[in-house]
Image (cartoon, rainbow over all chains, first blue to last red; front, side, top):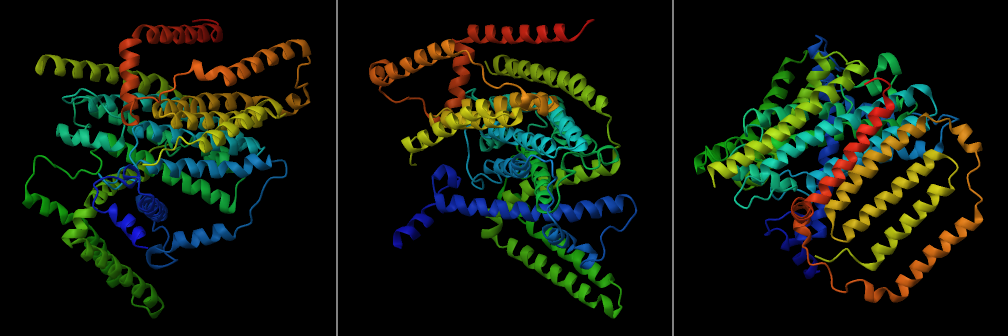
Length: 425
Length: 169
């Protein structure tokens, strides 16, 4: 018993990820935390996407289930679980059954290396970014399998479109990533790194986020990635794989119930995964704004207040809307529920003001905030851009983004060489 | 940290690979064959990982499982499955097959019995944590010329594909 406690406590004093420290217990705890957090994020995204899209189109969005439709995702989940699970008679049973699992597996496995903080990652791999790109590229296999196994026309066309699109944009994406990795090698030793934690630490050491490095080269690489990542996740305006006006629902037309919800889960967690790649590579990962410029204990204190303040703002929003609820007795439960939700958020905010807590979790907060920005962008794109035609999509990938990526890569390498050899000989 | 390169994992992944390889040639449905090939390639990536070569494993997953096999599936999906299932699957060239099998089997037996002298006994000294950097310095330093020749070959293949596909360039 004492040994077990000793084993569990031994990790707490180390400043490594549980994977690097080799501590199985904490690795499991982290995996559960990441999985739970991801599921909550997907649920929240589901609600936010409907709400924000609705407000962009001057509608109200879900309003019935819970105050302001807050319980809508839960109602949806119950509906999906209770729905009949249909398998087409002519479908290839085993492949049809496997496809959603492969997609979900690929979407969740990448989070093994996502660095939410210098110690807040499940593990740190020497090939971190390569692992993320590789495993997330496996999800296209699941999509192709789903489309083919359904033995139906629309899914097959959707799967073909999706695989062509993902393979094409992977090239541009890879080039953008390589130009960011090149920047990590601009240190005294001259060796770069592929490890996700190492990339953020390189940005910290060089004193700027890679998006601002060699302006505008970093910005262009980031732009290429930001476009390619929307195409990679099959989201609007690149959602040709599930263009509902042409293909019903694309590759998952024949799926229903629980299997369909797995595709849904995978889509959103893949969005979060590619956003976290973008955040790690160009936006400084877990670093707070101006970590080097505003570097003093006062500023540290000021920035450590942000997580608590954010949650208190959410709580205030809840209370404001609870007060504005209609005064009719039928709305009493909803008003109480919203106020109760506000109280919960406020309590979380208050806990985050405790210095010991806020010091531990503020890196997660900054990472999550940056990722949330990308999530909002995804919804914004969906609300504003019209869908591309397929030939336009291919033209964009091969004739615009790919040459741009090559150019940025060559220029970045040249500028880096010049800087290393002329300015610091 | 306990090493993962234990015999158990080697036999596990090797078994998955062999079974996957056998499935590739015995399945009638070409899509199933392709999926079995993906399984075999992923098992191979795990073996690379076990040999402390994470970079090779990552590249294996990205290029083979994520890239080439997707294109394979892409093409196979457009082929009529019904017709290909009815086609004869195995070639009956017994003599050539027998010679090839004996030669390969003989080689395996020879390596298994005399292999101790062929392969170095000491373990690899490269540390896992900077495997990628080691690969980079080797490829772009010591083996720069062969590396460039290989990329030239690929370029020729690309140009050949374009020339063959397009009637008028």
